[in-house]
Length: 241
Ligand code: A2P
Image (tube, rainbow, N blue to C red; front, top):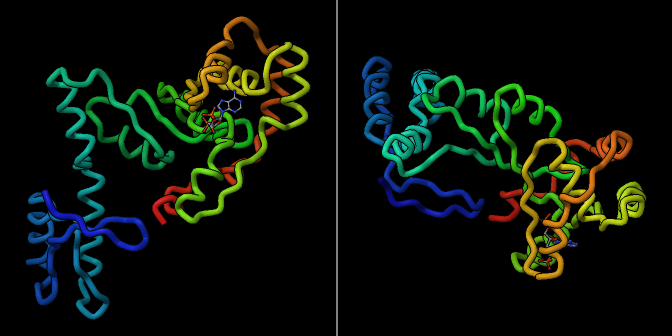
């Protein structure tokens, strides 16, 4: 428990932190352990205290011991029958691996940005290997993000995936909409997709993708649209900006 102060970067800082000046290394190592155990998540340090090494050592040990609070809390929810499964969102391979190494109940789902221009192949293969189902957010390339972000004074340009010539060609071939091709591509890879729409026509279209199948050639052509991390759209730090 704590009170959190909002920083201009968009992050939040616990109001009550742990002061470390003037404690010697031995005292501080014990003190840090006790502080983390007690719930401190804001740790004071400075080069002149000459204690950054001890602090780093205790934090590293703490993290690798698997005491990541939220995961333990989620596992307790499953134990109590209040949650059926645990999912993650916006975790990278290193972070998921750390969870897998320490979790008693492994996560079964990972929700991340994923679309034809940013297919997350490395993460996809990692999830497959570790039996984690993925869920794609912004599966259409978030065409409405520019308008949405402008409310926060941020300029974000959505990639025009719906207008891509390859997507258009495949849509024509199957007599389907471009959006349906993009969603079907994701689903056929064994990934879930959550296209947002408040328009009744479009939300119906988006679920009407189970009466056709993309062939190997279509899948290959769509796979080749991947531009890697440079095509990532959602930057949460900019959003919090
Ligand atoms: P709207 O709610 O007016 O339909 P994503 O899920 O990739 O973030 O995309 C959501 C955006 O795409 C929203 O702006 C949504 O607007 C729009 N959208 C949803 N479905 C379609 C569709 N079938 N064709 C074109 N745009 C769509």
